Amino acid sequence: MTTTLPSAAPVALQRIDRFVGRTMNWFYDHMRFVPRHRPVVICDVLENRAEFPELDAILLDPARLGPRIWNRLNKTSLFPPDASRLRRLQAKVFHSHLGYVATEDRRLVHSLDLPWVVSYYGADVYLLGRDPVWVRNYQWVFKRASKVLSLGPAMSAGLEAIGCPAEKIVIHPLGVDAVALRNQPRVRAPGEPLRILFAGTFREKKGARYLIEAAHVLKTRGVPLTLTLVGDAAGRPGDQQTKEEIFSPCWPSTDSNPCARSTSGSASRSSSTSDSRRMSSSSPASPPRMGMPKGPPP
Image 1 (cartoon, rainbow, N blue to C red):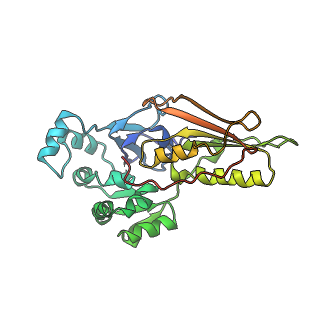
Image 2 (cartoon, rainbow, N blue to C red):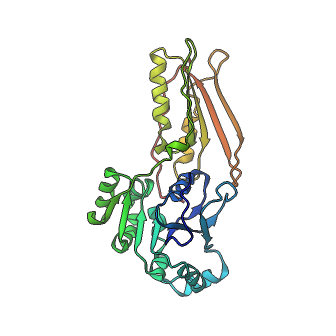
Image 3 (cartoon, one colour):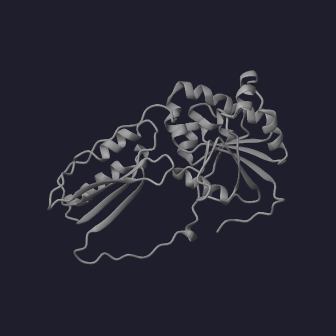
């Protein structure tokens, strides 16, 4: 259930670039359960609101003529009508989500003059933290932010290693509404294959490689199984390579050795494809090798 807060609850401004991207629906749930404060999302792109109708959101499209002209003349403060609109909310805190988004929030930080919290979630540390240009960009964030949130001890250590003061780091794990997740106990009948489903972005960190390797191990031990992979690349460097490696012809398809591949239209606004691959444990094969994506996210 969503926690319902009175309209008089203090406002917490929540900043992210896209709201709500379909692969970012975890952020939507993250915001729905913010206690004590009323989250108001500030974004550059507002989409899929029919599917994700809750929460107040403000679109500050940087492509508008007024902000474009203002930003050319002023490097430190927000377009005045936007600043006035946000100040009227009388927010108590400003929270930027994703490190690479925070680096673009200088005008918001200066104009709002609120305690600033920045959350890191993964690639913004493990991937961008290896790039000297991004590490330099992060130094202003680390210096100006009141608190920097990480998902766990390993990420906290990664943030410290690239210059974030340890006293500013707070571990804040992502939660899940376990009550709302329906489940049904399943018992595999004798002779029935073990059915495994992967549904997600075809990205190196999602671990499809290890799932395929695990299926290969089970196969060599005589476990009958069916592995189905459903998802697509999402535009970040390395995604397409990972997708191609997942779909590489490592398990040839024959009548007695099914390895089906199908493509259907995705429901996303970008009209990308959603690919699925179905494999049987009777397939001979060594698992595909996958590489690390390189470069910053778009």
